[in-house]
Picture 1 (cartoon, rainbow, N blue to C red):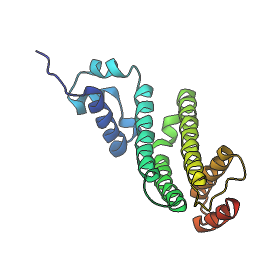
Picture 2 (cartoon, rainbow, N blue to C red):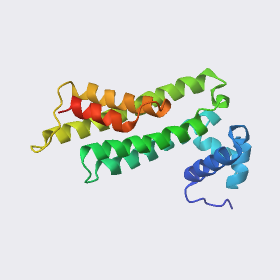
Picture 3 (spheres, rainbow, N blue to C red):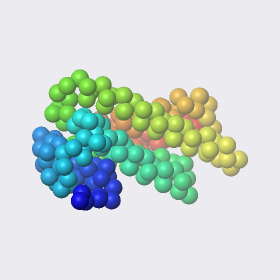
Picture 4 (cartoon, rainbow, N blue to C red):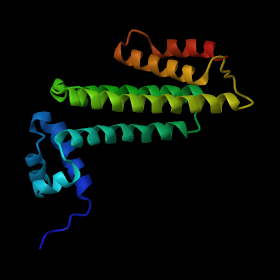
Length: 187
């Protein structure tokens, strides 16, 4: 009689991440995953028809975990600028880890990975812009707020996020200086 696995899809994802993080992409094969999970290869193919599908799912889960952290920061009682600073700090950790794990040349041997990765990135960047926009609108609507949105809220949120990403990738500009500029823009 076949053994029942509680949550095979999550087991496959967890073991796949473990292999990817410890042994690298080259060792991430359906055979190695099946061995690590102690399941048949066919079970993996029931959930993921290709290695690419599995990798995209792992990348998606990585982004979703980040958004859980962002949601906690947004819902905190901190003031607007502290929330933004915390989002920036978490984004910095996220991008550095993402770069170490997900931006390896071996992932992008085929155009499929590039296309899928860019599509996913665009979706999540858009989602983060909307989250920052929500914080802006909520703060500006507060009667006692010193924040006044003079430009379009979406464009302001996009400006904030793109500057965050630029400061993380090229750390020539300090966050504290950016915050001073932002305070001037939003007063």
